[in-house]
Length: 208
Length: 287
Figure 1 (cartoon, helix red, strand yellow):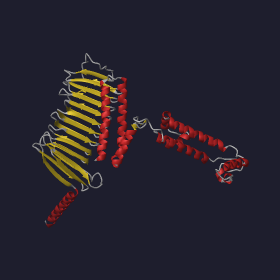
Figure 2 (cartoon, rainbow over the protein chains, first blue to last red):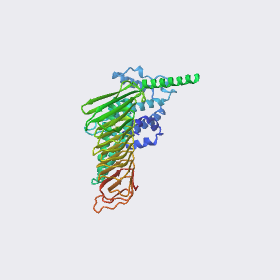
Figure 3 (cartoon, chains in turn orange, yellow):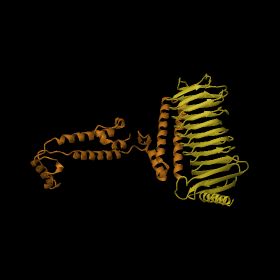
Figure 4 (cartoon, chains in turn brown, orange):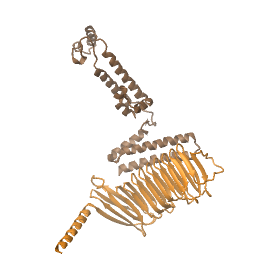
């Protein structure tokens, strides 16, 4: 499961019904784990607010005065009206569930935009998406193939790229563990050649 | 009797009508070129089978049959190079874009084929440099005497089958297709797959260098008793089992691990054989 898929499954995770896959991702992704923790806290606080007493009329009047002094709003707009929006009952300030949901959505939107605008990595260092085993350069290449030939199955090449990148990762590990192993070195060379061959074949197909 | 004649006439009309319709849909073409040794042909075809066969003499013959008028065959001669390409005129179904090719090649004329989905079959070539690229196309190469030339085959997912090939510098690659080699020998034979299995049956002859490498695919080797090999095999996370008599080498930096790697020589060890997989199973047995 990657970050995008987890975000789609967030409502279930907040309710505690998240799948095992989501748990696995949360263990390895600090950003997503933090986002889920914040959403759970908001949902928890929303339940607490629903049980609290409604503030008195004088409180609203003081808030309105302050806002007017700062030029931020008219006093009348803040006088609470007895409407369904504030929930039933005259003496209780019942925060409806959807107020907490709105807050959660706002935080989710903030979290998503923060994740998407992650600071740029140092030049020359490709971002690797651990679950997908393809880096930014691979994604750019696949996008170029898809653009040239939308019907030629860039998604299929992505699956092969993941397999090839996994083989490079494993071959590198073997060489690191035993640099004198001739077979390990040859596996690494061939793994890189496989990736190069895949790039060439995908590009040739898209240009045909 | 009269009725019989009428029925015969009707049958002939039906046959003629069918033939006419068939001709209107399919478009055949035949091209002939005079080629000197060292000439080369390159063919690019998206959909449809490509067959390449040996022919005596000095003429290259290219026969094509297009399934519809939504595609055409473009051919161009540039000196001693002949380029043939399927040109898509209008979008259409896979069946409408299909073009079948049959190429007859004299000795020492090179061939490059890029066919995405349609089997590539090569048979009987002599002294030709051969480059075959199939995306999902299965590729078959049989009875080729490369005369020291190169034979390069690569696919993304198409299976590769090679049989009775001699005197070739071979580089065979597939990402997920299986590779099968029977009686294949050369100065150098390099086979690499990422996920596909590799199967080799034969002598590993000609004092060659043989390297069969897979990341997660299995490698199965069957040798006759008379094979003269210097063999090294390793599977990092899989298994490596040997059932062929090998003598342990006196001086070797390669340390065998029971069930994971082994090495040794048979007879004079004239051909070098490396079998390597990261997580696949390696099995060597007597044929």
